[in-house]
Length: 311
Image (cartoon, rainbow, N blue to C red; front, side):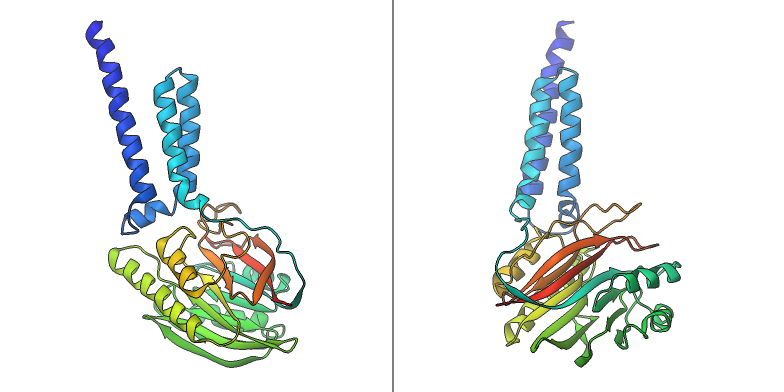
């Protein structure tokens, strides 16, 4: 009995060390593959740890419950740096609304996706994972409402499209570090905005992470060269507390925007877990009315926002 009694504190101490070390690694470790993938799920991991801590406390293991709670709070530090802004005060002129939709290339719910796009009442639609089959269906279903459109073909899951009710000026597909992206000028209310619709590489390996980070750096250079206001929208495959995302905001002085923690992926039964899709605008602009919506057959939720010019 005495040997068993001594074993318990040793096991508890060992588990406490493992939890604390893991939490410190997740919180302060570098954004390198595969750690960057795990770090994307810090919020759901923290929730699971807090639920586990409650169970441990219920079973009267106070020391272990406390360690689990500390670990949960530690890994919440990076997301806590991101401020969830509310509605911004001050007057502004509404320019146009825009919807972000990763429709998932293998999706067969064509009619439902088209109906969702139409009912969004957005002036612009940014769509990812649009292959030739999907583009034909979208043009057939949307061109009466969205007469201006452009399509960039790419490798599997990286085709991209932009549909608009408003004339698109200087619209073109360009290469963003190996993947297609779209840029176009959109003018409304006497204001011209450069819109960049992008789908950044998913960081599924060290090489793909390096490519995604190079895309962020290229976007930062483009923002720096642009003289007027700019809007970047798309599936950015990056959570806001990722180093690449934060470095981009620092370099460009772009604000994080409203509701940056709104989850969009993976979507199951209308519920998503982490924020990968984003609408970013330069300081002259702001996004109001941001909301998420379901996309039938897709593993992403969509985003809708109204772009306004600050007065």
